[in-house]
Amino acid sequence: MTMTQAKHDIKDINLADQGKNQIEWAFKDMPVLKQIQERFIKEQPFAGLKLSACVHVTKETAALCVVMKAGGADAVLVASNPLSTQDDVAAALVKHYGIPTFAIAGESEDTYKAHIEEALNHAPDIIIDDGCDIVSTIYAKHPEIAEKIIGSTEETTTGIQRLQALEAEGKLKFPAVGVNTSLTKHLYDNRYGTGQSAMDGIIRASNILIAGKTFVISGYGWCGKGCAMRAKALGANVIVCEIDPLKALEAAMEGYRVMPIAKAAKEGDIFLTITGNKHVIDIEHLLQMKNGAMVANAGHFNYEVNIPDLAAHASEIKKIRPTLEEYKLDNGKSVYVLAEGRLVNLVSAEGHPASVMDMSFANQALGIEFLVKNKGQLENKLYTLPHEVDVNIAKIKLDSMGLEIDTLTAEQEEYLKTWDI
Image (tube, rainbow, N blue to C red; front, side):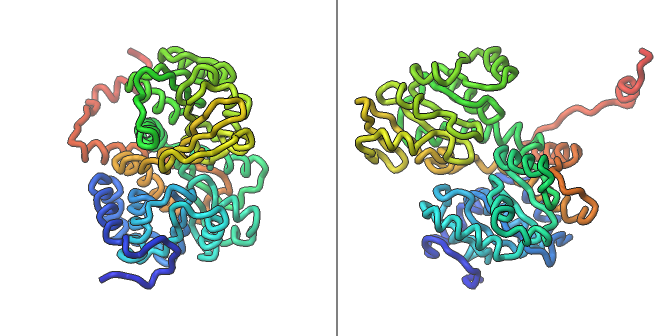
């Protein structure tokens, strides 16, 4: 039986059947999350609780919301990015899963903000955030809501940086779990998920050959490492720009060229920012680029490339392909911008594969469970899930892949405990 009663603001409810197929396809590759769902159905850890989730509305995040509802949560979903929504998935959540959803691909900034307000109108007890959008809005506009909240989980490095800033200023009003600090999140999702999906987005947007190109990556965190690895594997000459001496040294040891963006700007054919910071590629860098250079971003917000100042220098902005625009500049050159400077892997492609999001969203689900089980016992600070949770997720994932590993013998365990050898 379908459920059309759920509140919503979506593109087209008639896309629901197609979206349901997409969600079911994702679930086939998410064995860890399915195992958690089976337990949640029995235990109902979120019964009577309201959940507001602000994430990219994709088939994988839909699977997470379905699991949370199965655990008893009264869930509402809104988009964390105006361009990343998969409209068929949004329709399926409303019609087939009865989850109120507010997300439209290409929605205006005003609509995007109105949808965040819908998440807050739900009066959440628990929050799943991606980029700290809900939490930031609470602190900026609705501080009274914070009193009711048990806690929040945060998916991204960018969001964790915001939570860290709130904690440092003593302004964090409820506990939060930084999912990105879990090993089974950032070591796999950030490196392999972003590495593949960012390249997928760039190729879908432009259909260019990567081999032989000079590929500039700004930021060599786990996401940057994954992107550099994939670009190199496709035959690119990779340049890394960094502010951290340790990360820059690591990039050099991996065989990449390392230099400041001011120098790399003159050499690159393709640029990808992935730092979480503002104006990493600024107007002076954009104006120095080769004629025909391409610029993309895989960081959470569209601030990393200074698109407004680029537009100010453009005599014409021409749409070449669905997510590729040519900026014809007053210096006679053209720069091509992918996905409007937003997340290229989600706007131009479909985001991370389900198999890697399986581990990330297992951390999200277990993070919310951790907050609920420990209600009233946690400080208002940022937490990382216990190490044993990471280990258990990895074990389940290995089992699903049909892989076995060694175990220590009693003699080996004893040997590792003693200093007298």
